[in-house]
Image 1 (cartoon, rainbow, N blue to C red):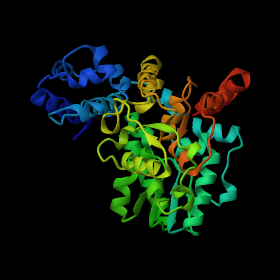
Image 2 (cartoon, rainbow, N blue to C red):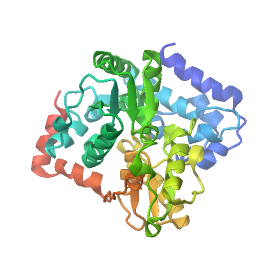
Image 3 (cartoon, one colour):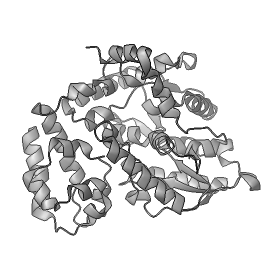
Image 4 (cartoon, rainbow, N blue to C red):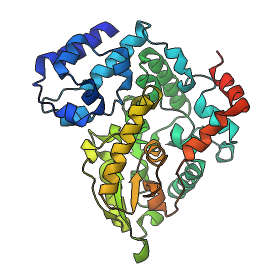
Length: 377
């Protein structure tokens, strides 16, 4: 099917099967703001703006009793918008992972972040796929994880690639396919037999490719299951009350959600669930690159999540996606936010405002010069 046919099929599925129960609208700030029945929205087809204001979080899928996917409809509209030239997608090329320089690479370059001492991207049976956010914003955690994994398996390589998810999120389907083929070629060249993922987005984005290639995949929690440090119980005074923010791509399988709760409980933490958790979790506000298209909505998503955190009366908010950690810690410090791996490996980090500080290098006259480099054709 071409893009128009895919969009029509996605909309028709909703038109034919939606009972207009309103559950998705009750849970989704975007659908609530559109204030229209889902059938009516699908009939007229969402606008370009509406499509790119969806966080693609999938909560609508989780609550739909008919198993429908408004998320897929919005994603299909994104692809159609790009194909028809209805959006100047090149205006967002600073996010494209297949360009020689993008904003992630620039931040690493400007802050002197590199991984040469870890001898990355080398031929090896087992490879650790850290993901862009961790590589860019938390090099210390990357080093700690890599050295911990080395203790479990002496032969392991660090991969410094992006999984390609931003291309899919932006509606660049063909470009994503080319990028994925390049990554597939690299994995073949490096003779990788097993991939270990810290990021749930990367895990689920590359799961089909790994399956096709016969590459085994593990979450970082499976890889560290027998780690002495992870399994060492906390001292009594360290056993705090925590709540887990779940990552959107983990909704259907719940793999990370189950593993991190088991590991945290085994470590000695007391767990309290928020009203929305596991497959019903609220988006952190960074899903679908929505902050680049509707910052106000993105911030509203952050605030909605933090209200549930505060209501849970916990001592620590933790998440297993670094993007979520950074987004939920960017403008509040009442309740500390930590990555699950910080808690399991027993070292805390100050994430409050970290992403904003890292991106501040793009401000001022020197920042303008750096931005010109990123946006150069």
